[in-house]
Length: 182
Image 1 (cartoon, rainbow, N blue to C red):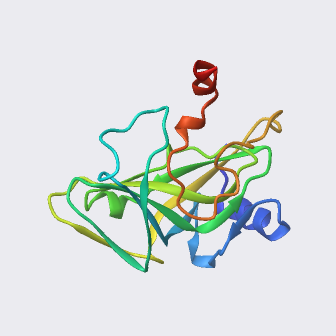
Image 2 (image 1 turned 135 degrees about the vertical axis):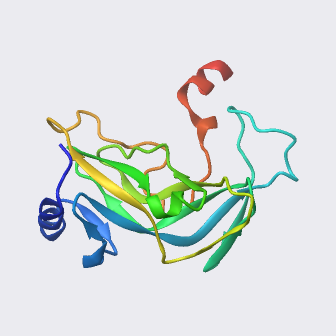
């Protein structure tokens, strides 16, 4: 079940759901608008010949209030908002229609597991033929929350738990990679 604005406000007020900072106008009828942070990562293509799933990726870290994404380019960004989900709730991260209409695709694999705590790393792709300049603090995406039928038996405690800025891929830490290396 998707949660309404009324339920979201009650859960935030009680502390059952944490979204910080939160602005009253960010709470929409069935979602919470999120804002672009000021931390970005760009794949350092000068230090690698290719990317694999079993080795760490090198990134260039950028901390500033605005960034321009060249046409057909990719970068990682973070939300200003830090969230903590209870063990019986999931969140979907969705791009805003107004942002998608300028050719900026926003994704984070679209899913936040129950028990997750941290800021959300966003994958941004400029599908336009023109550069897109982004400003920290602008609404960039939205969280849609859903209740589960019961608490998760094993809430999230994975490799992205507690992230406070953009975090690059940690796919090289997946369990099947370790099994192959042994």
